[in-house]
Image (cartoon, rainbow, N blue to C red; front, side):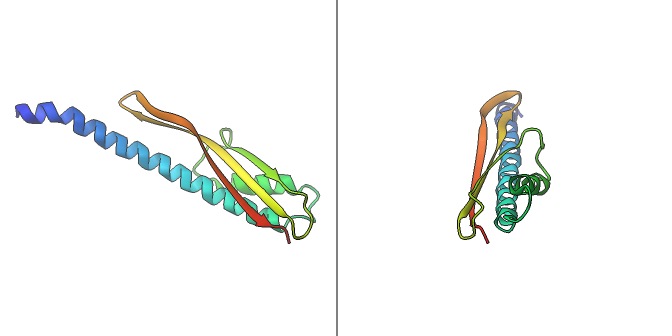
Length: 116
């Protein structure tokens, strides 16, 4: 019983760290998928009145698990056929275990597609 009492806090910290890492990794996958969806939308939106707005809107709609206020999206392109559209986004993350912040910052994802 004594050994269990000594090891329990370490096991709890390890368990909560794994859970926090899983949540952060899920957010990264969602961010990457949303940027990819936005780049695909941007590649076919050159005839839209506001192709940047359409692309950003697609990224925000595809990022269902992320808070829209924290999501920062940037789109770069000349919107000429054959050129590239680059969509990048960032989202904050923080890995906390028992109230202690172990790691925090912003995760980034970028995707490039050819404009049709």
